[in-house]
Every structure is written in structure tokens, then in C-alpha cells.
Length: 288
Ligand code: UTP
Image (cartoon, rainbow, N blue to C red):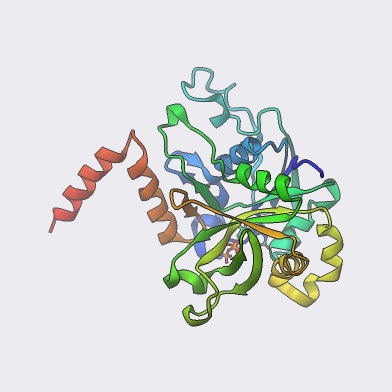
């Protein structure tokens, strides 16, 4: 079984729900208080053992600064140097997706540079149980756990998250038998949802992905191409799920209100800011 050495971060989307900011700054570069989303993802992928980082982008977005080593510019930065140089000694690759035709199409831009299984991270989604002060920053272990599941099973894998019954109509929802995915229903109504477990933006794709792109072409499946490929693995009994603990926070920089609440939630949990933010919020709520 091949090791998971490549990570693909998809960040080429138009970000229309985050306009106007996304017209000027990629939503994948927005800060979760003080650390950009992209930093969280690169450091999570590296903590999972990936030393080849692929960023899928579009010609109108610029991720070049994230590839720089800012320690040279700020030599006395007191916190972990990886926060100013997330790529570190990993190799990186920039791939352009010129037409925004969905997740599988975005990933396919990198597939000729990858052999073996690879990690996929949605570029606007942070999943982490960690909210330590910046002085003791730790990357999310979510991708590392997914890589372990792949190493145990040899199968394609996805993290899944319990979103509660009220939200099932916004996600791809799965039913499980043990850790094997039994069914996938896209954005079901509450009455027909097979569970409350949703795909949440972390996957291991196996090396047959490139071949499956030809079997399930984007011309036929459109944005649901990735679901068709996941269903293919599921029907062969080769799609496993890792259910995330409720201690994991799921933050999404793709929608204004969700991102605002994500920032507040994280800040409330951060030791440097939590108490002061609570005091300010209490004072603010008491104003007429
Ligand atoms: P989204 O569907 O949430 O992003 O994709 P979007 O298309 O940018 O959003 P809206 O609907 O216009 O507001 C999740 C992630 O996948 C990437 C996005 O950049 C985002 O990080 N993506 C999406 C691609 O790279 N290519 C695509 O064709 C679609």
C-alpha cells in the first residue's frame, strides 16, 4: 500500500458567497483571528506526513506569499516558526483550474503530478480541536487520523461530522455500517436523511482516481462528479469514514455569517482572548 505523501488543497473556487472580500483576497487566505485558513491547512497536511503540497488555484488568486519564508522578514518572531513559514521544507506545486467545474475537476488538475493515494482538503474548511494560545499552536490532527484509517484499510476514506438533523439539507449525508459507507444522499430533507453524518472536507483518494475521472466525466456529472466517484468506491465496499469527535470545531470561510461565528467561537476558546471577549460581549449586549 502506497504512503500518503501528497496533499491537494482545493482553492480555485469563485467564492461568490464571500463577495466583495473574495474579489480582492482569497477566502482561503482569510484569518481565523490571526492565522490564515491556508496556514491551518498546510500545517495540518504536513502533520499528517504529507511533504508534497499541491494548491489548486485560479489565475485570479495569488497564494505566492504563503510560500515565502517570513521568518527572514521577522527574525525575532516569538512563536513557532512554522506560523511564518508553513511550507517549511515540504515541496509545493501550484496548479491552475481555469474553469470552476467542481471538486473532482479541481483535483484532476494535480493528478498527473501524483502517484499513489493522496489527501484532499477543502480550502475554505478548518476542522480542529485545537484552540491553544499562539505561543503553543498545534496543527489539527484530523488529516493524520484519516491517513491512519487509510493505512489500516487501504481504502478511500472521508472524515464525517455530525451536523444535527436541522442542517442535513445542506450537506452530503452518509449512512455507515461500522466504518464502511453504505449510502450517500446529497442534501436530503430531514424525513429521508439516512443519518446526521456529513462529508466535511477531508478525504483520502486512492490512486484509481485518475481512471475514474474517465468513467464519470465532468461533462455528464457536472459538480456531482466527486460524489459519483465516492459512490463508485462505496459500491465496491472501499469507502471508509472516520467520525470526528464532537470536540472538533468545523469552521468555514465560504459564507459571511458562518465565518463571523467561526472567528468568535475560536477567539472565545483562545486563552489570550477568551475572557476579554466575553467581557466585551457582555458589555455590548447590555447596551440599549
Ligand atoms: P465551494 O463550493 O464552497 O466554493 O467549494 P466556491 O465555489 O468558491 O463557493 P461559491 O458558491 O462561489 O460561494 C469548496 C472549496 O473547493 C474549492 C473552493 O475554492 C473552496 O475552497 N473549489 C470549488 C475549487 O477549487 N474548484 C471548484 O470548481 C469548486
